Length: 139
Image (cartoon, rainbow, N blue to C red; front, side):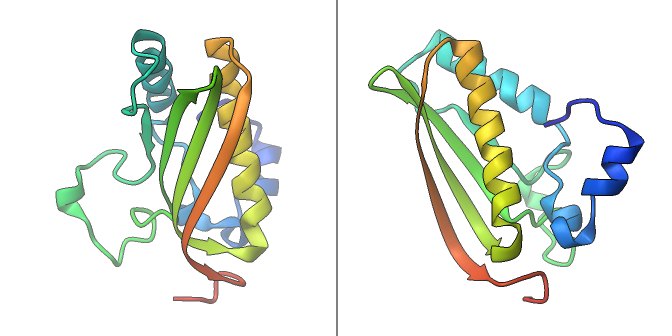
């Protein structure tokens, strides 16, 4: 989420088995989270509170299928307020079953953070997966 972490935490958690460059969503994340919070504070009914995961430093016109860091597995998180709760839908290009828990933990932590900033309870999370595989051996 772009939060500070120790070198020990980096060595423990930032592993290729946990997604490598495809699973690293940190770049620009704090700005994206702040944008979502501002959107929902300003326009609580907005459906434009979106966290795009790829293309952190370049627009989509530079898409390159050979760049694993650009082809993030999670594509977008759509956050919205409904029934007085913060809800979210995640759109995932490829979900490796062996790191599903890591992704859900990230999404849940992010949603909880945004909900606390907005002073609303957390509602439902919907997880859309285009492809699912066991591990990173899938191409």
